[in-house]
Image (cartoon, rainbow over all chains, first blue to last red; front, side, top):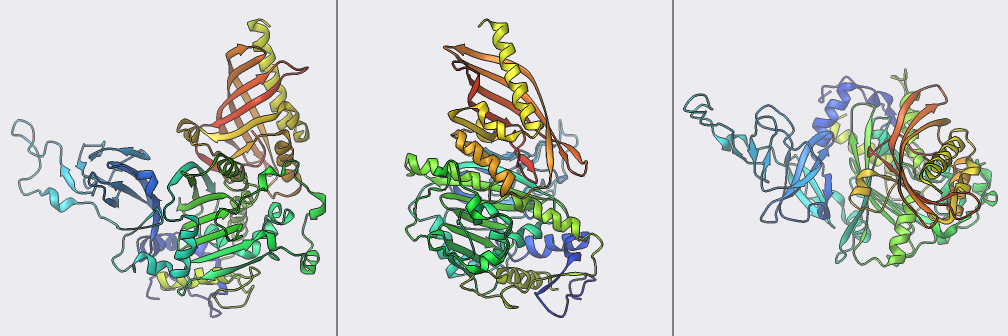
Length: 412
Length: 157
């Protein structure tokens, strides 16, 4: 194995995924090196969160701490949140505004591009101590990330080999991303939530790539016909297989005999909302699409569920714990009614959301379930054995695209 | 009502409120609120920065009933219950039959397998209507301290 991991991928290819990938510390470490610090674009934050010169925000690429900042000249930079001296976090808070950043440990100071600009007592005190005469500040610039922005989102990559962002995404994914972040609209931040998932990061990444589960696990959706698989919709996967969009149009749902045969736990005629104002959405993008889930490899998700707009960032917090960060947004020109819809429909998503709370738990069920299954694999054959765009959501095609991309990065 | 009577009435309402949740009598929970009302679970971070979205919001008794119905019939979550501890109730304002009060809360979550953990801490910011036959929450903000929520939040706080 060229990757150094003692792990053979099953001969069946991407329809079989070894459970060891969720339980081995050496795999987790390789993922950090090969995926997160490798040739991938990683979501850092919204441009709106660092709108003013001097604004900075602490974020993560995988679990690696990173600072993203808007310099006094307005340009964006991102670099490791790690002091050159002893490795402490330069910024231990989540955000701020400053001309320079100082490590609290010994006061080493950086500009907003990650250049080391001052070392406390570099010349010593009263001629005694201090750094050696040949110590050069310029040798200790923080490792920077390449930055790219699209539709108000800031992405960063540690690798020189990563293709340009729009090429990485593919034209169809770019169009769908711009759909929920239209040019000319000013993003307004509406809130954050954080959810600690008791599972490996890939179990959530897979969940998002799996349209098959959506109306089976999340019965709130199915019951109200927001997203039954019988509604018109489909899957778009980019040419590389790494990124995908799943979408549907609730108004096109038709009664399907296949649904009645599936023996869902709740029959829809038993369950009606007392207050249907929750799901009275507005077709704000004018195309009838009521749900769009867009996932970029490895850890970024954009979500439109009716008028609830959100970006989600997945931050691994160890082999079996993952933080899911929800950032809710609207637009500056929202009228009062639309804003109220966004607030109410946030009830559908997030850590307590009617159609997302299950996702917090289900990865944990897998993580617990695979204890002792080191020789076993997942079976991913719904919708065939390929990864490609399909006009159905009764498929696991995007999941296979995820694993194809994963294998390429991990050389597995 | 005098100060002591108000303090007693607010604390008794809070005691009844948390007993209703901890005893899993969620069908009775919406009746603790006026209709329309405002109930919101929101992080102290969002609340402090005036970011309007939280974890859950309801503006009517109907939305509260829908929450209970969804928990009972639609949503999947491992069997669990809460133990609420409420303390340090402060009466902030008492005018024309409406009392504003703040209390600390702590919620311990007990999973079906016995795993027990501190799930949430924070404060209640309540606006209580005393002008009817029984006091009800016109507004109840549950402002939780830590932005992190473990796994999921199903049962109300």
